[in-house]
Length: 341
Image (cartoon, rainbow, N blue to C red; front, side, top):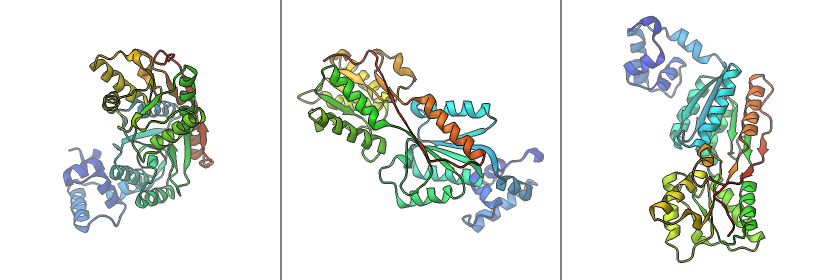
């Protein structure tokens, strides 16, 4: 091994610990067990690694480093926002580090510590704990502690008591636009599939759905509101359960577009014509205009959303603060999947 090019990742591998543990040793973090500390220091000595210089680099603020934590890189909603932020950040000379938390709170904590220890300019956070209707006290306190060291930008989420920059799209009004569109087409029996109870994006959409149905004197049928998560497979399972009901709706709303893709698949598997129902999704992810039938869905106004994220990042990096946040209007995109009742 070339000693001149040794990094904390090499030390971590040789000592059989995580890079985060090595960085904690370098910064004298008290959370490291003494036995682990000595093992890491021994490896540093063995490999002629200079801990003083490494510690200096770790504790130096990285003015152009942006940490980005999202819950599921395979979900196009999250990945297309990340990719657009990364592209614009690169043009400005910023460095973006992506971390995929897999919607796991412990993994989120690891990445929050990493970006705090690296003294990133800011952290962009999506999904996970900031979408929980009732996050734990530990999660809230950790975010408050991180926020005291590194500015946080939350996209489509918030946490009570955590005064970060908050940028979100108006999902409640997005649901209203869907229901009003379907009502204009003559639909009176409407289902809502997907999502998870206790996740704000699901809870808020469900509340808005019930409220708008009531305004139009339409029935909310509990058997037509089916939680099933957010994936294509979840959409297939929800549609299968819906098709088992004695009475069926004429229109189906998905918590996101992936749910409707799964519903399409289940209809085809059961040889039920997709045209039996009107379908509307939410997110307008990139395949929605090319699936068959092309999907009517709510667009998050991505360009405006990313513009606001970048404006906030610029403000933080230029020392102007985080601002008060922004609510961005959505837009209903009408395509082939919605039709008259």
